[in-house]
Length: 318
Ligand SMILES: [Mn+2]
Image (cartoon, rainbow, N blue to C red; front, side, top):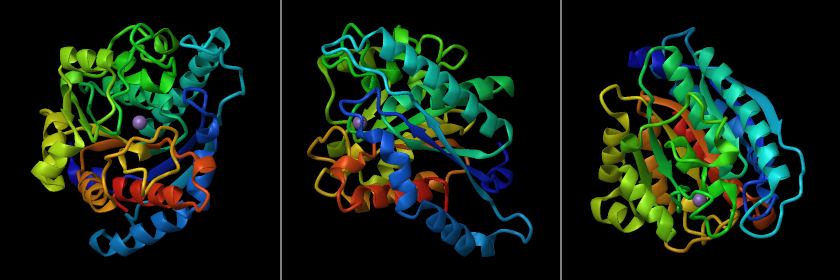
């Protein structure tokens, strides 16, 4: 990895207009809400202010590719979401995976806006597939979330696919993501969860068996955010330093970020999250960024979307 080169990567934003994997469909409008809250302006200002450090002519550009759009299909009530929904999530995920792989092939930094977290199968598989095409090992993963998203169809209490994509990406069988993760599996020993505090019993067993590192909010508070994120990046970075990062707004406390799909008390305050996000964004090993689960229907004053803007900007180093 050549850090100087990596820090000058252009940024390509892509929206995942997807809500099929969640409890409600409101997150499909997340990308538009993040843009409306000023993402382009924040990125432009952040990069302009940092440009004194960068040689003239090498300023990083930002390009917004628009959205990858899921079709509306009905969900079957109960634990099995139904064949139609599973088929659409698979079709959608393959389209998004190709789009993220194309960004990586251009040498740019993908910034994926969501959208329900099932989109992570596509983003994270794309990262590993791109790495394989370069002869690199699969990068690690820093997953900032109230949840571990590691259920399978056998363990899920809800049947919602946004809670299963990391089981698939770590090699467990989840039919909706079987094709999506082909060639794109990740090494669970390089996956670190920051902020997980709502973990189902079956998931807890899976995450422990896989060997993922879980740093719950209490441990982040005990270590301090600087030390916690340093540990997360050390484990995820492995020998080569490369990792991707996924930021679910529900990692924040619902009192400051109400506009999400699943509200879990006891989350990060903004100062803690800001410290973590800024530290990640300064690491030259970051290969892809996701900011997900913004639900505008639960965010009437737009405060969660504004935090998502700030999170995205910090994660891409702007
Ligand atoms: Mn979550």
